[in-house]
Length: 277
Length: 258
Image (cartoon, rainbow over all chains, first blue to last red; front, side, top):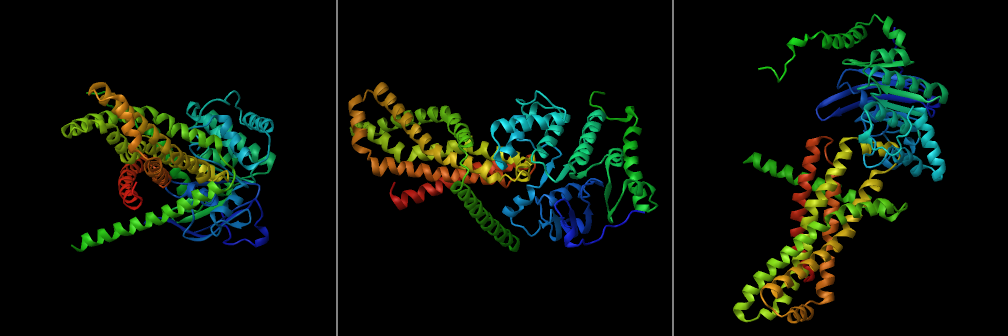
């Protein structure tokens, strides 16, 4: 049976790789996303946030990064409450974070090499030779080579995701945030990203928090799952979720599957086409 | 009636809100200008985008405006037998008024709108958030180089516009209308004062550069992260900056007599 996470964690447990939400309320205008969200993401584990469209999955990541601030509650990241920090102080916390955005968020006026070198040039005192070595090491780790001089608009979707992942780990973060890392990818590319994330987690001990729609990928790599349901959040291990008899979770998991099946069940003849008279 | 008053009240509140945010935004830009690192490469790139890529439009427009001034000035002056003053008319009109104002309006349409659209697109595609997550301040890295480049480029573009305009006036006045070339130049030399006219003209261009730089970067930076948001930011940059230029032009002229 999945357990609801405790609403508070002792201060001693709030170390560099621990993220905790306590009583978070978030709304965009009249639309309330969270009423009272409390959950925790354990250190050194892969946690996956699942939920329907508009359930606030990406907002959770953006709150961890201090990119949006909740109306109430606390978000503890690396021992700091990011809801109480100034913009300048938030940069200090972000040095421990890496974030892979859904669309890559690569600077489109810069080449792949310059995009990857940017955090090193800005945040470290490394020389150009060392920076080049680090960049090529990361590109190799994500399975890319000979892409230094390409601009982001010359990359395929899978390559963009991998470059974004490489940039997110340039500064060796202790917490890695990934927004929909598998979306829009073919199965082989998705499995490659999956394997990369697992390696980053296992080899470097990085806490990974990712948002995904992919139930299959989630069940394969997640240590913990946070499901954002219409009437509140529920968390547990993938096995606990699968075995759960909680009707909300059963409905959630079956709905995800039903939605995918529903798309494949539409007969081709019934699809509208502009070519037919 | 009550609804109209209510709408007016909301508009006034929004205006004050924007002014306050623009003040904070300006202070943040000033803060990044005053502390290292000095981003020379980004500044030079921005000067190229704003200044060098505007050269053709500035030269062509400046020459055309000078030619019109030459033609209109000659036709008016000849009625009073004062065509030998054509150089002074063309020179003073361009240096004191038309040079900085038209340059600022042209730069707003070409470079200001492009700056707002570029920054707005970076907002919409999460590139600025990407910078924040790398602990890089987007104001420092993206906004300041573009705003400062606009301030630096505007007086230079204005000077080029004036030179092209003087050439255009000479072309029509001397080449077509038969005014003596020496008379045109000496009339220009004797009437245009360096401190009162040229330095004042550069001051106007500098103020317009600050205005366009701030408005374009602010509208782009605060745009909604959608294609409609980028479009609205671009449009409002052109409208707000153009109106601001004309209003500030009046006040600078009235207060400093430029």
